Picture 1 (tube, rainbow, N blue to C red):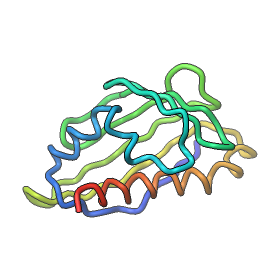
Picture 2: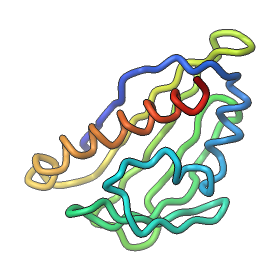
Picture 3: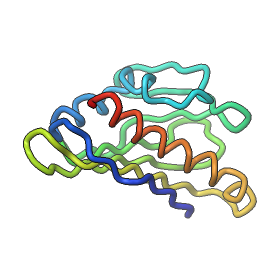
Length: 133
C-alpha cells in the first residue's frame, strides 16, 4: 500500500461548512489541478482523467459527518485507492484539513505516480484553503 499525505492547512471555515462542500462531488471540480481533464460528476460520484497518467472513477465511502470524507475507487481504475479528507475543528470558524491518498499499486507504478499524486493532494488542500480565504 502506498500512502501519500498532503500538508495540513488551516481553513477559515467551520468543519460543517467544509464537510457540506466536500460531500458533493459537483463542488470538487473547482479544486482540481489544471492537469485534470474530462471531468464529469454527480452529487455522489465523479470521473476524470489526470493528463498523461490515468482515468479515475470515485464514489463516497464511509463518511463521518463534519470529520472525514472518504472517496473510494469505483469501476475501472488503474489501481484500487481511497482518498480521505480529514477535518479537525479548531473553533467555530476555523478547521484544519489534511488529505490522505492510499493506493494499492505495484512498486513500479508507485515510483512513477508518487510525485504527481503528491502534487495532486497538495493542490486540492491549497485550493480548498483559497476558496475560504
